[in-house]
Length: 260
Image (cartoon, rainbow, N blue to C red; front, side, top):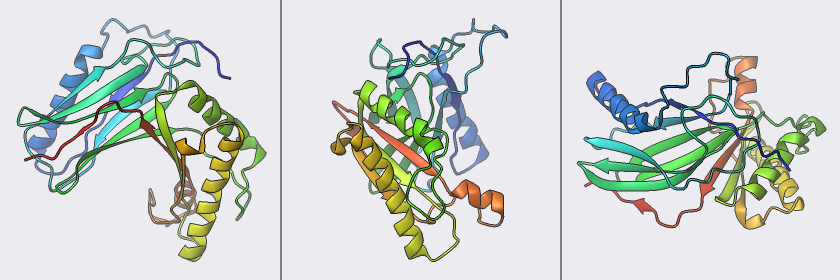
């Protein structure tokens, strides 16, 4: 089990949308205004311990993105998730929050997410005309190491898997965890997909053996279909060989409306 000391999160806000620069500035101002009430201006102590934890919000580019969007981020509860590190300077306290999106002053989308006390995570807000808004939360952990061209996880990566076990046991607000395994473009794609699926299955199998319910786990092998960078160098290929973790938070109500 992990410790019970509290660390607070630093909130980084990044907004990525298409369109004119004035629209970019407007959306950036809106999102900063939404978060401003949570910011403690008195936290300026340079001697305070630094934390790598944080939260990044990005809006995925979309030509169908509706105009006149505003955002709110509101705390859902006062009790934070179980903390695992010492206290540090912060802008956003750990806990359960809700992202609310309004279009033309009409509340259109709302969904909960967790601000974890010791993890850097990203919120990916996207929009499609047919499906409306969607929010995906990823958590960032040290990359797993696998045996070369094999499904087995190397022993030096077991602490990462043990951390995931403890996280899922501690945070009951996590409804599900998806394990997404990627590789570079070397080799034939059918082989790449099989290898990444085998590796994702291996990770999920480890978590299930440690007592995590299979209903909370999903394994996805994506081959080389989603590169972060072009596979043009050894360094880039290493970046594309990665494992990602997507968290779904328990929702008592979800507003997933479309913009009119």
